[in-house]
Length: 66
Image 1 (spheres, rainbow, N blue to C red):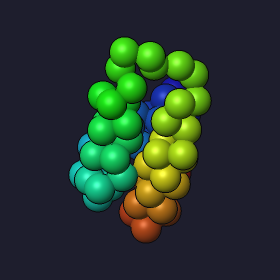
Image 2 (image 1 turned 45 degrees about the vertical axis):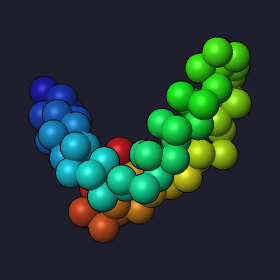
Image 3 (image 1 turned 45 degrees about the horizontal axis):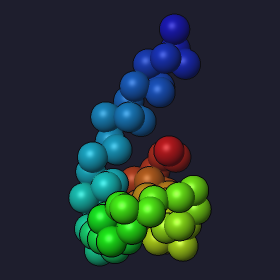
């Protein structure tokens, strides 16, 4: 049960980390919206990777991992 509690604690911090990545989130959302008619796998991979890296960095600064 300790593992579950730890995971829940990390997930509670996720919105805080996401709020620190506004620019990257916006760029990813714009890419998805721009390509919504022909959305395919990995079409916005570069933007997603930037968002993912930002979230990882924010989590690391917050003393945890995603």
